[in-house]
Structures are given as C-alpha cells and as structure tokens.
Length: 389
Image (cartoon, rainbow, N blue to C red; front, side):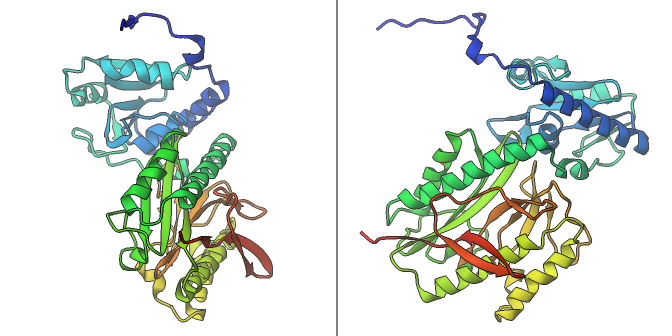
C-alpha cells in the first residue's frame, strides 16, 4: 500500500482557511479599550494576561491552553495602550495565529521552544509598570481582577451560549436515554464526553451519580458503581471560551416516593431561584426567597450541603451566589442554578434579562414538571422513567 506525504508548506484548501470575522475583530477592539481604561485609572503601563479565562475573553473565544489543559497556558498577551502582543514559542505561534487570531490585530513575540517562556515575559515587562492576572515572578504590583469585565455578555456571546447550552442539554439527555442499565458511572461519563467532544465542546465538569450517590458526596464525579435504579447526570461544557451547565435525572423503572419528593423540592428551589434572578435584585434578596422554600418543606439546612448557583461565563464559576452577597444580578449575565436535596440534583443555565430569565439549556423530548412561583407557571425538567429490561 502506497502513501502520499504532503509537505507542511503545501497550501491548505479554502475550506480550511478561517474567514475574517469583522464583528469579532471590532469586539476585541472594544475589550482592548476597556482594558486601557482600567490601566489608565489604576496607573499601569500594561496588563499581562496569562489566565485562560481572560485570554478567551479578550480574544472572544481564543484558547491559550494545550489540549484543553488550562493549568499550563502556552501563550500570554501583553496589553498596552498601543498594542496587544501574543507571547509564545515557535511551535504554537502558527496555530494560534492561523486558526485562532487571524485578522484580530494581535502582534507576535516568539522564542524557540527550547527557551523558557518565563524569560520572554520578563523581558517584555522589564522597565514598565505591569500588572498581571496571575502571580508572576518579577511583577509585584498586585493582581488584576477582570471578572467585572467578563461577566457582562454581548449579543454574540449570548448566541454562542444559546447554541452551547442547547447542545450540552441534548448530550446529557441523549446519554440518559441510551445508556444500558447496569452500566458504571465511568462508562456513562465516557458516553457523555463523546457526545460533547464530537460537537467540539470541552467537558469542564462531568458528574454521574448512581443510586443516591449524590446524597453522600455532592461533588462526586464518577466511579465504578453501577446504575441499578436511578442516575443523576450533570455536565458543564466549554466552547469558544464560554461555559454552560445542565443536569438531568433518569430512573430505571418506577421512581421511589422519596426520589419523587426530593426531586420535586429541588425543582421548586431551582424554579424559585430562576424566577427571582431579576436585574437589580441583590443575591441576598433572591437567596431569601430560596431559603424560604427549604424552610417551608422542613429541610432548612439542606442548602448548607452544597453550592446553589453561580454566575457562569468564561469561567465555570465567575462568582458564587451567596446568602449575604450585595452583588446585584445584571441583565446580560448567565447563572447556573443547581440546587440539590439529598439524592436529587437539578441544574440549568439561564440568562438574566429584563423580561424574565431565558433558559439556555432547554429540554428536548424530555418530561417536564410545572411549578408555580408567584402565580407564574415555570416548566422544569422532570424525571425520565425508562422501562426495566
């Protein structure tokens, strides 16, 4: 059998060449201007961006991690009032510019892969008053917190989240409908990861909890336990730097009275949180409504077992929703509400809007439960019941 080898210098096909995205380029310019305002007000000459969340935000979806490993970014960006310069090695620069940053106005400083990139970063910062978004040797002016800039989503990002949320929910629900009874949590997580990855969604978090596993360990990921009666499947997926999360529960055969009870309560808590995530309301005001549901149903301390919600976006947790937080909800931010009650966990990502929250992870071909909140009917995912075989 013969093989044909193409030279790396061979031209790529037109289908492989990225098209210049003028809207994205304009948005990058606006974000550069916002950073410039921050630098001016804080008295800095530049900002060194290393954190993958900030890199993705500034570049409107770029990725400075290798194979999704956010712990080891392969590129940084030095932002000054005049320029934004990508700092990386010669191995990664081609892919970063050809596939990720073409036409967006970034400059490049690269070094051979044999040299420590720390030296390059120190070189470009020397003699300037630079602030960094991560601790960095030689920069002692403190850390820049860009979360306030990241959390407000533009129309482009909202549409990307709608697409992402819909596909994350679809992957979870398809996995719930199709795994074999008796499969292990890890096997189900593998099926879910496959469905996400083939849509170019990076799994940021996967949870598969068999037969009340979540009652013991609210942050359980997955293991070797087999699903015999019911299963909670949850995921947070990342694409274009943005995150969306969802959770669904499936039963093999009729659910127990206890499972139906706690699932309905968790659903009522979630629907309350979603309904009262209103622009201008502080997190404390919304939290009080949520806490009343727990108290009303005689589980006043259940919320202490795990987090209830967080602002989600370029980070899976931009900001937690806390009982006494005076942070107001803002229109154009996304919230992942995922309350749990004993063995039940529910979860969906919503967009805070003036006319009421928009569900970004809608169910498709899935049973629903109707919940009344202040006279309004809120439909939420119910338990999927599969026949025993």
